[in-house]
Amino acid sequence: MSQVKRIGVLTGGGDCPGLNAVIRAVVKTAIKNYGMAVFGIEDGYEGLVFDRFVPLGYEQVHGILTKGGTMLGSSNRANPFKMTYLKNQEKVTEDLSQQACKNFNNHKLDALVVIGGDGTLKIGKDLQDKCGMKMVGVPKTIDNDLSATDVTFGFETAVITATEAIDKLHTTAESHHRVMLVEVMGRDAGWIALYSGISGGADAILIPEIPYYIDKLAAKIERREQYGMKFSIVVVAEGAKPVGGEMSVMKQCDQAWSLPRLGGAAQRVADEVEKLTGKETRVTVLGHIQRGGIPTPFDRNLASRFGVEAVNLLGKGEFGKMVCLRGRDIKSVRIEEAIGRQKLVDPKGEMVMAARALGIDFCSAPEA
Ligand code: F6P
Image: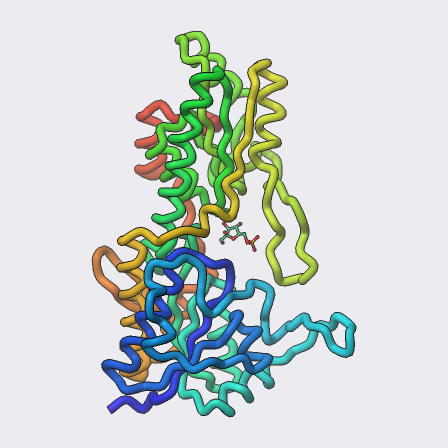
């Protein structure tokens, strides 16, 4: 018999298609296989600190499998160790981790399922170390940049959204003889750009792992023009940067531990391309559209399997672990092994080589 009788579940960080499928799987497995009581914690760690717990049963998770976003709400600012909040109408930042632990104990929880990216999982592990708040992690991100799992749910849905956008932009590009740039998400990783660029038949892909030379992109566009191809499609990862340059940052965040908001990468490229080639160059920024929508069957499957396994780990008393996909199998790794290790595109890897073989330009130095 499992010692774990009452569990909490929270979603932290940016939302991602498939989060609801995980929540549903956690609730169903916990109730059906283990007779556990489940509590949802609203808005990530904010709800843990400010005591926003809601009981979850079959009824609450009915019909959420296909919905994007998270029924629990999320926050990518809330960190119990450095919580910024309004105290007597003044914005303060304080360590409220004791308060989070107190709430966990007051609700008599035995363990927590933490669904999130690198930052969210690290906070969960730190809380476990600080006050014995036992946890298991479920990785999520559309960026697909966590090294401990082969794939994260949400990634495929984002790639499909980006590919469909590229398909649609092709018609205007061809009709108006324009250069069309599509900016996709991914932060430090170029996975969304690479996958959607190949599946959408892009002419060039600019990713953070391969800094670009703008004159090489201009030359590519002009070469195409000489062959009679009067349009070009370029996929620009939001983290793309020129050789010797930096990523394009739209806004620094007010909290020291938050990442800067990226933006403007494609517009920067477009301005220079227009100057160098004289061709009309337009930008489409896909933004949060990539995080929304109905999760694909693959993402729903992966998310559901992750949710089931997370509860199985709790049932077996295997705390401090994160579920992951290895090949076709659901496995788990220790949280320490999972966090802080990004999975980035290998500039010399098979996918980049395949893209190059297809004539897709990365606008890099020949050796990159
Ligand atoms: O990590 C997922 C992601 O969508 C990144 O691709 C992107 O840079 C970031 O989150 C945007 O976060 P926010 O919605 O907080 O601006």
